[in-house]
Amino acid sequence: MEKSIEVEIRGRLNDVEYARIKSFLDQHGTHKESHEREMFLLRDYPGYSKDFVGRDVDIRLRNTDGSCEIMLKRKVENAREETSLQLKDTNLEAAKKVVKALGCTTAVWMHRLKEVYDYENIEWSLVIAPNNIRYYEAELVVESQNEIPAAHTRLEMEAKKIELEVLDDTGTRELIHRLDTEANKVVEL
View 1: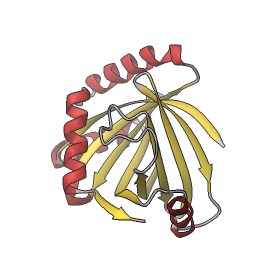
View 2 (view 1 turned 135 degrees about the horizontal axis):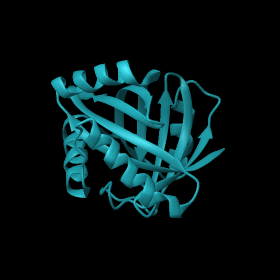
View 3 (view 1 turned 90 degrees about the vertical axis):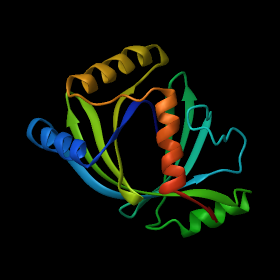
View 4 (view 1 turned 180 degrees about the vertical axis):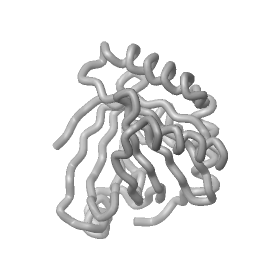
């Protein structure tokens, strides 16, 4: 079981911006991985909220290129503490049956393609969702709550240095709304 506090920012990208930042990271960063991820964001549990920004607890089933896990994220200030429970299965069918028996009968299905880089000791993910919705995520992992503000400031500064938009809570809600209406779908488990 892995636990950490993830401090993250994101911003929208169009095709031209995606190509520009990918080229920049190919030249100046280190490509860590490319992966395809299918996720099921569970909905029927205490702490769930449709509002991503205000959600206190986020529980997902994730399959990243055949590596499956249950991911728990708890809100800590403007960051999230993560706990990963690795599964031995290479698909999520058994996990879906188990969480359904626990009362989670519906989920938000998500599919993402990611290019992940390290640049300036920050993890940068370039993400493509269905319907060609593109965005980036930049994250730092910290050990304690008192490190969150400095990490958030550093992420914003580094994103602005490479001319990337940094979404505030309103912009994040707009991106998530677009993903929910154009890329994600509610499914029965």
